[in-house]
Length: 277
Image (tube, rainbow, N blue to C red):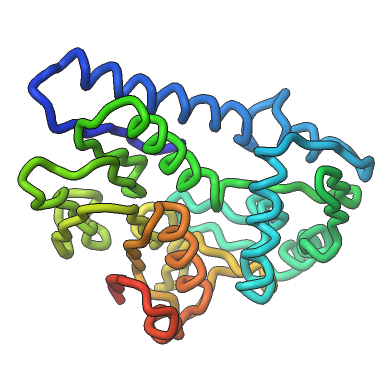
């Protein structure tokens, strides 16, 4: 998952808590092993190495590809799982390296879901293209892990993967779980706001951890697949609460991709959200 992961369990039984955390961890590792773009031998590696040849995928992968296609349409092409190729140009490591336009333009020739042939269960990429499910994978892992934990116990639990989280079960006192929305640049040491989460999921998208600074400007890691550049005018962070972590993450990402229009987008959609500018 590329981040700290935890499972909180409301119980006095340490062994039960460890067992539930193990269930969540195993599911997270399974999804990591299957869908990480950094690992060889998985379905994403097979698709990316196909060099234009069609690849048949299983139902779980097909579901994620269908979801990615839906997000591509909802974002009017801004969210695109083929835009992972832009990581060849961008390194959001807190440094000051900004790629030049010719480099980005060259990579954009290999970006665009409209160039992909997807007829479930067969996907075919044009040579030089690749997919990256990182934009939806962590939230999917949270929901899957939370569902497995919930099916194994009636104990109240919270699954938290790097600030993207989901609740399983109701707390004994019905107060909900206290969740802090990180203040930008605090590195987790300060909360901008405290929220009580009683059900569903929550996800945050922002630039506090992954960014580039150059010429007095901060470039966040949310890239528009249309331009190859970080979205201009985007908030420092967007946090959304919804029925699932995946749904929350979808709204948070789509809002960030709207740039300065993030808050208006969230208001139109009628979702519970917190925006830090």
